[in-house]
Amino acid sequence: MAACALIPLGEEGYIPLAVMLAAAGIAELSELLLGSKMASKAGASKAGMFGSFLGALLGGIFLTFLIPIPIVGTLVGACAGAFLGALIFELVFAKRDSTSGGLMKIGVGASLGVLFGRVVKISLGAASAIYWTLAAINSVI
Image (cartoon, rainbow, N blue to C red; front, side):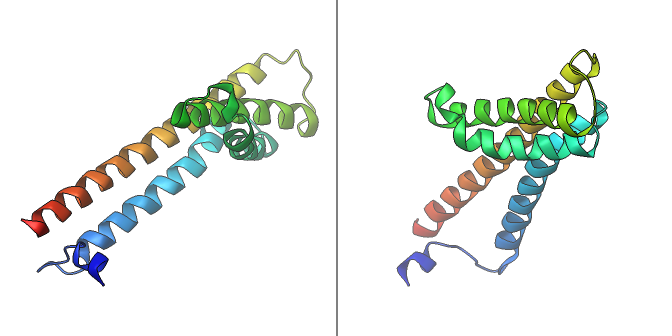
């Protein structure tokens, strides 16, 4: 019950909470879709788009060890995974050969999309943390 007292709903009711939840939803969707969309704009097929998504997910989990700094390692792992996933899925399922000039462009597009999606997510998360910290301080004062 004491934790609920720290969440200042005040006169505006649940509107700030709803705005924060909407921002979190937008952040998750942008992270989810930007890698695939940028790979698509670089010329990837649906297989490459799916490979980018799957690679970012698996890379964020298994390639984090590349850089042992908590947030940076996960970001680099996700970008590397998106790059590799898009390349592998394009080669295997889109029937391209390894000499295709567009493969690097597709991989870079997927990596940049994941990077931009994570930057949006981190920015909205930081803004939410700052808001709730200030709201908690104001409710105590």
